[in-house]
Amino acid sequence: MSVLGFDPVVVWGIILAILIGTFAFRVSFIVLFGHLESVPERLERLLQFVAPAALAALAFPALVYVDGTFAITLGNERLVAGGLAAIVAWYTESLLATVVVGMAVYWVLLAVV
Amino acid sequence: MVSWQDVVSRSGGGVLSWSDVRAGARDIALVLPGPFSVAMIASVAAVGAGMSTAQAFVLVGVTFAGASQLAALELMREGSAIVVIVVTALMINARFAIFSASLAPHFRELPSKWRWGLGAVLSTPAAVLALAQFADDESVRRRSYYLGAAVPLWGVWQVGVVLGLFLGAQIPEWMDLGFVVTLVFLGLLFPTLRDRPTALAAAVGGGIAVVGAGLPLDLGFVLGTASGIVAGQVLDWRAGR
Image (tube, rainbow over all chains, first blue to last red; front, top):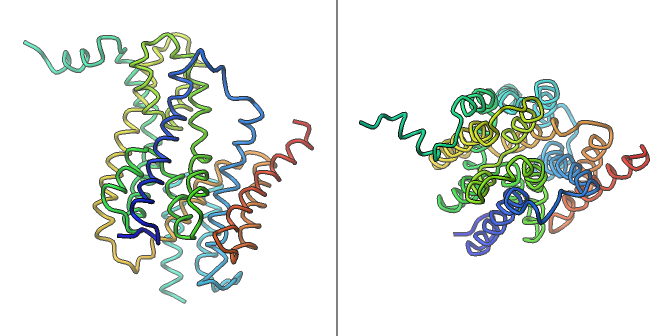
């Protein structure tokens, strides 16, 4: 059974690669302490930009494109709901609140428009 | 006669300070709904994408990661190359190495069997809480406090995964849960914006990804992420850091 167009064996490969790498990160210093000192500050600073860049690169296109069409209009329910959810995220930093508000607004807009 | 308290305290090898374990649990309690939601959403998304129960369970539950897994699923949907999917997920999870490094000095003298376990249940909230507590309070028993915070979160995560695996099979298509994933990305994005360089990284990353959305092999995402990281780093340098 293919997953999003990927062969199941390939999918397992991806899953296991991420599993092993993530586990390695977790135990790296806690277990190997004494062999490595700490993450170089430059690298640490660079890694701080990964989440903002990657998360935005994933979220923004989903908000401004509707079925492949560029749509920065008030008729784009995802954009409006996403914008309000962003404000909630900014002020509350609560994931739960962001998702709940965003979905609520989204469903209301879908029903009304 | 052995009481349940005896069993519990012996299972820690007699070395845990239960008042500190409770303190860790009390401190982590407030943040548990967030990871629970992410675990559930990620599991639902994995099942919705066509993964088997086993695949979804290993992806979200065993790997004990949410944001990276949602990103991986999204990149698979966008037709990214395998290496991009794996590298992106690992870049998002690289923060665990940083927390591992920050916590390592505190656990240095513990037997290595304990240290494998402490590393295995590492999560961002537990690490942040533990590091703050260790800086604040010299006398706290660190392994105990950390486990008091980390193990409940790990447990709640697994419950979220199981619930998500179950629900994933039930949720009807029309509910458009793809948008839930987008909202999760937004919800995870904003707490990471701490200063102008990180905000710029997000703006450039998102902007370039939008412009490049039509490119094949999901190059829009790759270029967006790379540009965002570069933009943030450049602003950092110009600010003199």
